[in-house]
Length: 162
Image 1 (cartoon, helix red, strand yellow):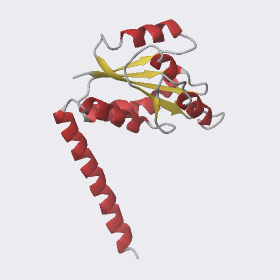
Image 2 (cartoon, helix red, strand yellow; image 1 turned 180 degrees about the horizontal axis):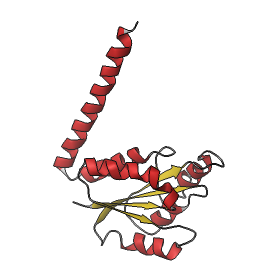
Image 3 (tube, one colour; image 1 turned 120 degrees about the vertical axis):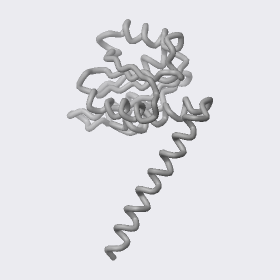
């Protein structure tokens, strides 16, 4: 099975990206977590991205806040799918990171999830890897059924109050 890389621009993003790690663990997907900055360690970020495919990765999650160029810098140097997580900061509530992550030029796509949307970033990686993995696809089906059941249970509880 291919691995997923979780790259964060700063260790302050760890509380957010840990949700991606937890989700990948639930599905049994191997992953690595690294801190690389598009601005402070551009060579290391580039080297990681350039070598990710040959190092066994199937997708990359890149999380950053403020001037969130990490996902784009990674995507510019790989042909693997890159999922960007714009992280909320104290300045503009993550809108700056969202715009920096989502506004990529043609030819350098970054799939972008919601601000602090680490769970969805991981689920998107699972869906990408499940294209060629029937066992993983089945796990996704089970997860979606469990999620639906939880919502219906909440519906029943709320409906009974009225």
